[in-house]
Amino acid sequence: MSRTLMPPAAQGHQTLSAYISSRFDEFSRSQKDVAQYVVDHLEEVAFHTAEELARRANTSSSTVVRFSQALGFEGFPELQDAARDEYRQSHRPVAAGVDTGAAPLFSLDHSPFEAAVAADHVNVEETARRVSRADVDTAVEAIAAAERVLVVGTDQMAFFASYLRHLLMLLDVRAEIAASPSQEGLSRLGRIDATTLVVGLSAGRPHPMVVRAMKLARHRGAGTLAIADATLSEVAKLASCSLYYSSNSPAFVRSHTGLLSLIQALAHGVY
Image (cartoon, rainbow, N blue to C red; front, side, top):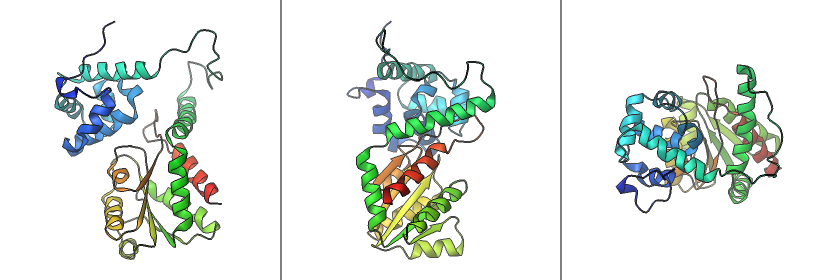
């Protein structure tokens, strides 16, 4: 089988992911949603339709096609070929006779319930693989050294922001949350200073308030930590330290099992 040809503009980039990352700032807002999903979920892009990718990235199939063309491909099938090529290169078959690990959790004809549980299991493993010890150590040290920790997370992230605050308060860490653009939440952003560590939580496209908090923290010399499910997330790019968690799910909502595991492990590290 011949190797998939990348667009001429991609010369110098060994992989599709690296090429997309280098072009990220050029894309439109909706195309950035697709870019983030492609880079962090290559195995899904390699085998899903454009319609399925659009649904997972919360956009339209026409945006997926335009994104493919913006990269220099004729359309989505050519981008998918490049994704498959990169996926196969990074997942070479294990040599014969080598044990590949434990048996699958469920049979091939698993129920929707079993599929969701299996996805959560994989997300915890993927989160553990993608987070480096150096980044975790940096995050733990930043939390322990801060005079005040402000956790910013809205909508579905509000629960996890509250839970992280709860865990830190059990450890006698002064922690607050900003969970909505209310007067109280905005006043907490207004008190950010150089002694504050701002922790931004993000799933998919970040809420404007989380982005605002990270920008304000940088402007005022505060520490910044991002916990996001997209390595190219704007929140992650604004933070001095970022931790990635996997949120793949066969369900109609993202999986937050990896995020919960990450939050609890961070608190244990501070302990």
